[in-house]
Image (cartoon, rainbow, N blue to C red; front, side):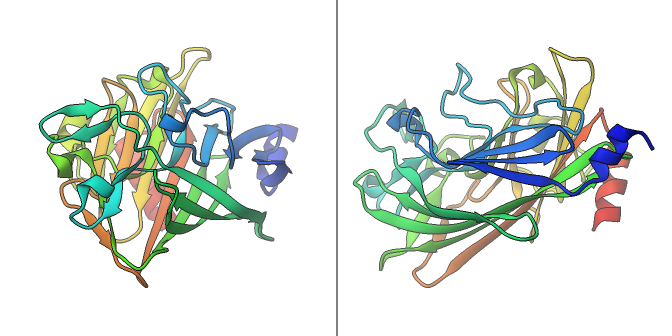
Length: 308
């Protein structure tokens, strides 16, 4: 085993610097989390995000603030429309950018919310745990969130590691809230809502695989699958990276793009809204295997199967 291999087998190391949290595997910063960024314009929905995420060899696999969608911030939780049940006028945009309005298309509205961090800590096992509050455009807190994420299963031989991401959402007021995507509101094939990965620009036109055998974003948009994977090729360095996404529970309906931009989202509300009642907790859990190389469907399935 070389010295670099030995470094990779070490437990991930977590470093905190103000509102920034970094996780290192050896000398490589594989994850950086930002909990506050006042330089983000209000209309882009100020919220915590993960960027950059890197492979074990150092390849960056997230995009941040691209010119086509400035509000895309690496990997985060984002909801295009969140408000009272059956009350579209009360909805807040926790996605950023223009909001979709039936019959009008995307419109710039003064409806952006923000997700504030009230506290965060690093647990003994390396998990980063944060308490967040989703604040509507009118300044009223509507949803509380306990968010936890960690670097797991570092595997130098396979050339990968796994992001474990959990979110528990609860209503803060006395009325139910409703999560909606643009597809729920009337736009076809735009069911994005929830846990969202934006890839770097050079990954545009990448390869999309799934547990069902279907391939390509067009074939998988809005379809259910136990896992979905995206492979992209780097520009500034040689090689590829593969990200394999899974969600706990029933296989989700996937929002995925590969031509307009690289993006993957196991949607909370692709075709139907998701209602969260007071006293109810919405528990979400995702895992993302981040690997060096262009993995085949067979390799992805084998690795995910072995990992359980």
